Structures are given as structure tokens and as C-alpha cells.
Length: 104
Image 1 (cartoon, rainbow, N blue to C red):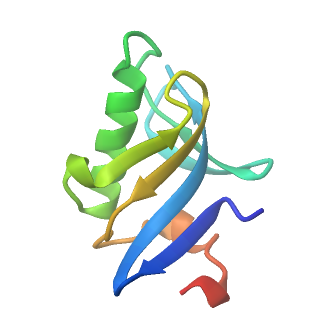
Image 2: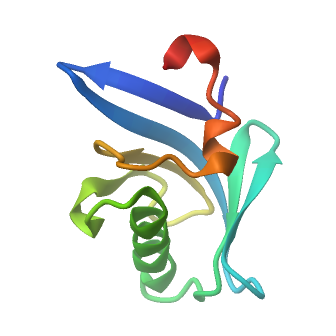
Image 3: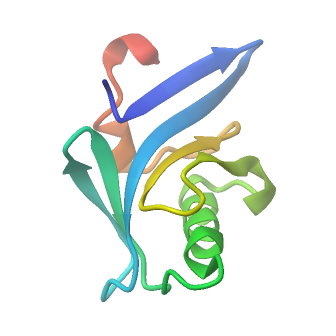
């Protein structure tokens, strides 16, 4: 399983990410692979949905899209998440490196 997929639905390209989240990290960063998932460290604590909101904001900023275009499909309550980013304007280099040439 590839942790990052590029989906072409009717001329719109969406990113599908399988993510392992590390909350309460010392800084925000896309770390790299963690098993079969993309590890993302964020400074927000995992309390009352703050980590999910912060993760969505972080990914929206990295991909230059509104927060409304970042959707947590699975894993609202855990560290393992499936996230869809609709029509990203920019693909961060850490994510682009994981995309297979066939998925572009």
C-alpha cells in the first residue's frame, strides 16, 4: 500500500493520504514514512479535536487550499488517519517524493 495516492476524478486531482499523526511534537513537520503511512508531527495536543483541526489547517496551508478542502475520512479519534485533500494547488516536496510516477 502506498501512503500517498493521487486520484483523478473527472479532471480534478485529489490527494489521498494515509497518515500517522504525532501530536504534541516540538514542531510541525512532515516527517516521512512510518511503516505504510506518512508521519506528520504537529504541536497541537490531542484534546477535544484540537489535533484534527490543527492537522487540517497545517495540510491546507502546505497544499495552499482552504481548510474546507481537507477532509479526514477515517480516524477522527486515533493517530492513524485517512485524509483527502481536494484539488491541492501545491504538493509539498515530502509528499511528492512518495507519489509513484504512475499516479501522476
